[in-house]
Image (cartoon, rainbow, N blue to C red; front, side, top):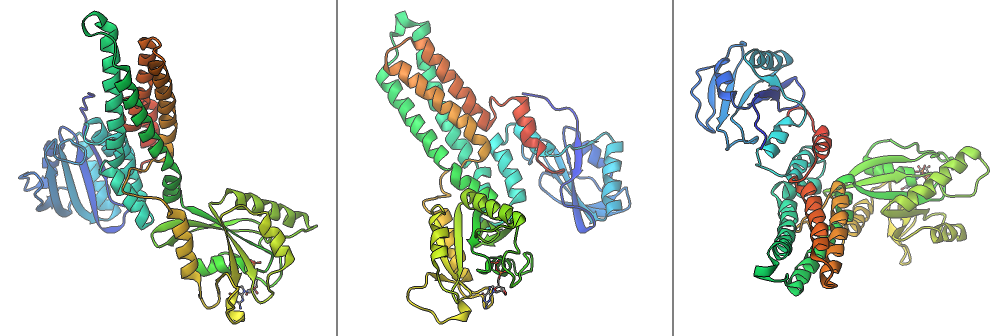
Length: 435
Ligand code: GDP
């Protein structure tokens, strides 16, 4: 275990000015250094004391003992007035007494290095801080509580057990005989299935984190830009009665009942000679293919045409057919989903249908992976499949040991046991100051 000798300091609240800010001091000398700026200094674990700061402000000091703090180190959190002068003055005073400014993510890095959390939990801290919607928050919270860490560690432990048995039979074949191939194979099969279940969550993990991508399609003037604006409740896209005015893609994130959805307004789909519009139509097709769901709008007052039929036939599933501008005509039995950007009719129902489609079959109860976890899981799966093949075919056990060792190392990259400094650096690089 790395020993950390310095004490770091940074505001852990947002940008000043604010009514209140909190400055965190963490490291072996945190209490000693805090005693130099805070009066009266009578530290007691997790007890806030009101006092005066040597910098002229006043506030609360909240000390935490080593082993019982966020970082795992001795810590003090000082709340004070959130003016730039007050915060900077305190940070400077603490640095003059021996602390140094924390790097982005360094508090969480220390929590990881002290063994309080694993890498997936560190990533979840970042996701919690950045969560924009209720579902993103829930996903991040579950991962922060260790859901994914436990599942990956469990698989790794099982692989370690098989490796230990294989190595023992290699080293002490006279005393303990050959490895029990039946039991080793069945354990490995179970672990491969568990990895497959985790890999299956990649899609929902991406959708929850990055948003469910919905391409808004249809012929020019179908009402696409108006629908985007209706969801955004502002005029982001240009709405005009002249067909063909949205020539580029417009992407906006919206919150559909806790799910982040990314709406992509596209150029109308039609054959055109205008070279700029042509590019727009081409981009619309690319966006349509790349999206998770498509909304195909048609002007219900102008009715469904053969051209709509032709355009719709070129789009992949799932695509919802949507009768737009439904305020213009009475509802008819044959209408699909009806929406009106003018009156707001149908907007909530369309959002609900889309959310339902995004989340179908997904459960947040089980661990859900993030894009970083995919490569090591795939690599671990391949290595385990090789090891299983070797063991089942009664080929040499040292070959199986190599595969198992590789799988174990790959799984450890996810939780951090075997993560290289490069992987760790990349993860904490994305953090903001004070986290
Ligand atoms: P786009 O080319 O598909 O993006 O279509 P627009 O959103 O620019 O809308 C084309 C025309 O239809 C504009 O004149 C809008 O005001 C009108 N429009 C759009 N949505 C509605 C609606 O829900 N009801 C009514 N009555 N008119 C609409």
